[in-house]
Image 1 (cartoon, rainbow, N blue to C red):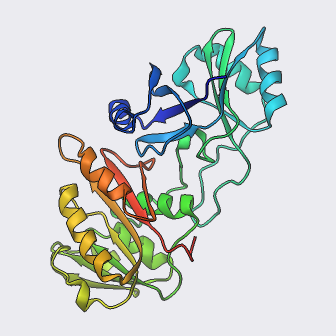
Image 2 (image 1 turned 90 degrees about the vertical axis):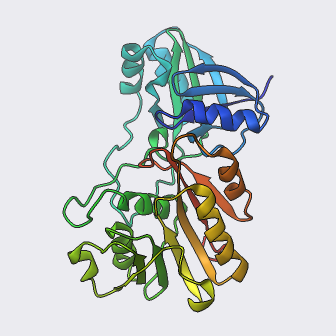
Length: 308
């Protein structure tokens, strides 16, 4: 039997995923909406919101039979609507055990139970995988948001990064937030109990700057000399800049070796800079992903293995 993998592209970025897979030498056999079918074992793909590791085509005789065959394989399933045949697919999903869709409360653990993904490829054919890379439906993490305190929704990127890795700053750890204005990331780090040194040319929102764990310094994210910072537990950066400039800055901190954990956003302006993204992904110990709330950007993480 031919080994295959299914990649679910991040919304709006199917072409970016195809370019990424093409560079990796992956042979794509079919594309349907956001679903990309390919030959061979899975490769890491930053532009994939979820990867189906063990996909199979299942012939069904009825809605009841479809639900029965999925239940035989495992309990928990999430319907991916990208395959089509929506009405019939929803009837099958309604016959499966209920999987909670409640928003995640930040600070709680990611689900541990396996969550399979499936779609109705044809009226009589299910495409399903009991094993996927994400524990969340379609790889999308939806939070119970704080709509009052953070000045923008950018704080959700850190919430998601900390949730999917199971790692976040601990009380009294030192965090640098470079390019921090208006302060959403600084707020998240401070709420974790960390000490935050927040740097930007623009000011923080007043109520964020008043947080007792945040020390704001007016300046450039790129102007801080790593040699003057000492040991840093977390370096976080959501600054708007070209990815190659971010890479050069990160390289200076990596060379000194004084930062234990990194979380940075690669923000693409115009065409996607796949080459720089690959250079980030090639840094030992790295993880490059498209988070649920990322737009035309990727999140790069490099965590201390002792903390994972």
